[in-house]
Length: 507
Ligand code: UN1
Image 1: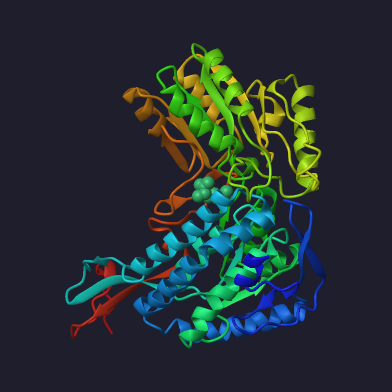
Image 2: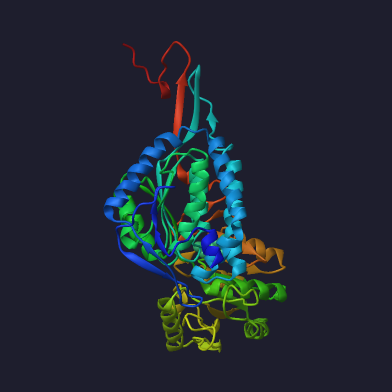
């Protein structure tokens, strides 16, 4: 297919490289099948331990040079990566859509997020500010500055196979770090394509090999990064279980981790909501990306006075959803990533029923022409009680749980009463409700929105969440600080050496 050639994907592909230099890939070979049609796209060779060592050595050497390049000059290279992504937007968006199954619009949207974060990082490269403080001692100056950390390990998930890497890599690079990327084994080709795009730009700018490294492979690669004392920061996106094992290993060696893990995001639909707006926001939030965003809307908490009306609107809207090949722009919902995800979806539906849930829109696996991959499922809606164990769990599939509430305090308590804390929203035109929801007594999530859904966050804000979501913040605002170390400097320009706190130490 055209987009494979345009993004440089070969049928036999090494997923191990230090930039322009590709290593053989002495580890296991694994095949990337498209969930769109079940066909093999290419097979990817993964890294052996010896190759991992080579990559880390190359990254260490590159860091010594890259950290000396002025930050605005590093920004200029990232600006060129943004331009290269603009040129390849269509091809890369199609590859993402074909490899992991999100709609073409969303695949293109993901590449747009990459372009946006490049622009953001370029500006940031001139704004890595520290503070100055007034010293308590005469003729002393105090200030702080930010230095790069070194190697940043990036572990990314299949559902945002390219954007989440770019949030980390572009910021890490302008800060002066080098990156070693371990992409999801379910979407390695999108990673290979990005690596090639970045590597070409780096080579053109005479940036040393090792600033941008790719190491495909299974779980063991994530564990190597987590345990590796040469990797001061590991940024990991994925399940809370994966994040916990990464964070534990990283903490054991006093490294830093930046975690972006599971969500169980709710929207509160007030009786004062604009129900038409609420409908668009919730249907996109729940069924978009086939329910495979960490920001997917999984729960609706609906005021009892509008509960039935809104439920019926939802039913009607779900009836209009077109499920099918995501590259066909007529379709709203593509496939799940693989048969394992279909199995998890079916198990969650069964558990929901067993726990007393009532489906108002039924789920099920689609069969027949166009659905041969076996990965297409119907977005569904169940009426539940908030405490059902299944409602407390993140299932990466389009299952929406709905429940009524009477008072806003009760709705907020339901919204907060889950282990995860990523994204949340309220639909209301009532100022008091909106402000209470955003106050310290309101949502406990990292993201809290009014009159928009839970997904589709812009890159300019800090992205991430609390509790089992892991506490990390990526992309915009001052998230860059996680990629740097702070150094406090005190300079004495006088001819005496007074001690702090007025201590006398006369010799
Ligand atoms: C994710 O699902 O891991 O807010 C990231 C959103 C996107 C990012 C989601 N900007 O839906």
